[in-house]
View 1 (cartoon, helix red, strand yellow):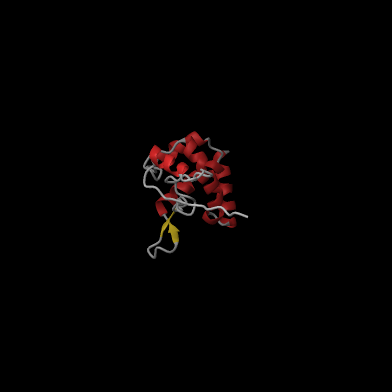
View 2 (cartoon, rainbow, N blue to C red):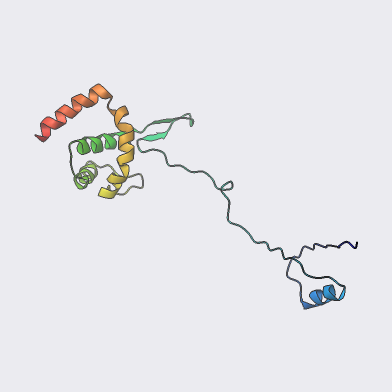
Length: 145
């Protein structure tokens, strides 16, 4: 039984017609083609970047997150107004009037406040422990009535 001979060649540029004619004359038959190009980075090549939670900043030790007091103040204002059942447009207006801005330096909008809701839910229990929150809620309810 006769075996098959295989050959693999690497090219810096595509070969011309003369190359193909010579290979065919020597008895070679094209059985495969291998293509190569530059690829977009894969997941392993991509740097993992995650935004710091609003109200936090990188600590001096660069290992821990610590409270950002200015952002926490904005969070508390947002929380209080939302608990008082104020519309998000009013929350945004009030936050802007007190001089708070988003991290990009823009004014707060209804949408920006809406997008902050998951963060507000996340921090509410830390901002106001259970006893503090119930007392504060009672005060807010009295103000609304």
